[in-house]
Every structure is written in structure tokens, then in C-alpha cells.
Image (cartoon, rainbow over the protein chains, first blue to last red):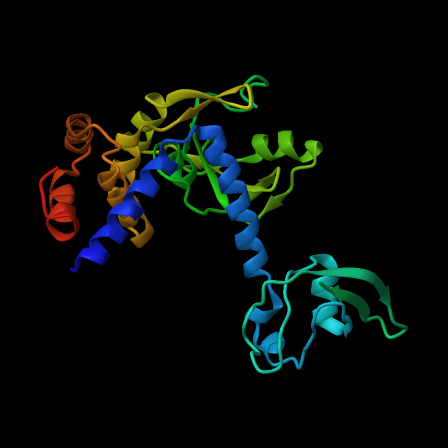
Length: 116
Length: 163
């Protein structure tokens, strides 16, 4: 193992020890944030084959109309994503919010998302 | 729940308890070990009284868990000697002004060793790296619960020293 790697590992251990030394309540707050982030990632439509195959392209300021199962999922849990056409499986650091959600006559919901 | 007499002595175990001693590690559930009431004439244990207490408070069962304030809480029986002594020797602490009990680091290591899943072995390695347990106390627990040989194997394979 070279010096750089040894330094990286030593720094990592130091960080872990400083985190371990935090008060329990503070650590629980971190855990809650980690749990919420994990839930968000686990529930992201990009993790499903259906979603990753979806031709969804949006940039900042776009209003996107989604319908069917994808909309159902987004409407119940607004997600954080932006997807470019040339990066179909890459989660982008962006936010979306449902601005309106309504049900069509056939029973499938439609959501309008604003990408920011 | 304890004040209401629904459960008696309890101890938090698993990843949440490990976080008491180590850096936070992502988890979805809280494992709470308690002494269960046996169903008369059966070896089964019942969660019914816990569910009956929590349901009217709006906490819903979901599989083996009950969702409490966003956490998947699982009540588990302290049903063998190791879990039972872990329960009895849990450390008292306070979270948000509420008194609670967390298993000792040594018992968490012993339980992880006994359970032996991949994530348990990683957790033991975290305890070792952080020097987060009393090796003498751990050896006593391992000896009482026939885990000394398993500990030796773990050390030989993953640590390379005899902690």
C-alpha cells in the first residue's frame, strides 16, 4: 500500500472516530437523515427498469407531464431527479416538485412536475 | 410503553445500539429486545398486547415491524442466555429527555458474532477498529456463551491479532 492510500485510510478512520464520539442524540439525528435519504434513493423510479427506459428529459424550469404508474409513484412521493437524454440512468443533482396531480377519466393519475 | 406496563425491561440492540458506540450506520429499523409473554400451552410468544397498545396511537404494523415515528420498530424476544444477559445488563441513557436502555458494546459484539451475517461481521470489525469495547469483559461473555472458538476464528480470518 502506498503512502497516499495509507493517509487516506488514516483520515477515514479519524473521521469515523470523530463521528463515533458525537453525542448519541446527535448521531440519531444523522441516522434519521441517512434513513430518509436511503428511502428516497430506494424509491426512485430510476431504479426500476420501467423508469430507466422512460424517455424522460428535463432541464431547469421545465414543466413535465407524467402519467400512469410513474405519476402515481411521483405524486405520492415527490422525487429529486433530473435526467438528460444522453445519461438515461444517471441521477442528476436537481429537484422536482409536483405542482398538480389529478386523475384522468380512465382512472390513471397525471402529475405535473416543475424541474428546478 | 414501559410506564404503561405494556413491556417490562427492554434494551435497544442492532445497528441503532451499535451507533451508540460507533459512527452512525444507515439502517431502517430499530430492534428492541424484550422478555415476551408466552402464549399458554404454546412455545410461541405473543406481540398482541404491544400491537393493541400501539394501534390506537396510530402506529401501524407493517410485516414484522411496527412503524413508529418513521422508524420500523421490531420487538424481538430475548429468548436465550446471551440475549437475556444483554437485556439485563443494558446501559441506561437518555434520548430527548426520555430514559432508555442500550445493549453494552461487548454484548453487541457477542451477538453479532453469534448471528454471523456479513453485516454483523462488518459491525464487529468496526468495534475492533474503534477500540470500542472492553476485551476482558467480552472474553467473559464469550466464555459464558460458548463463543470463544468462534471469536478466535473471526480474529484469525479478519483481524489478524488476538484482541
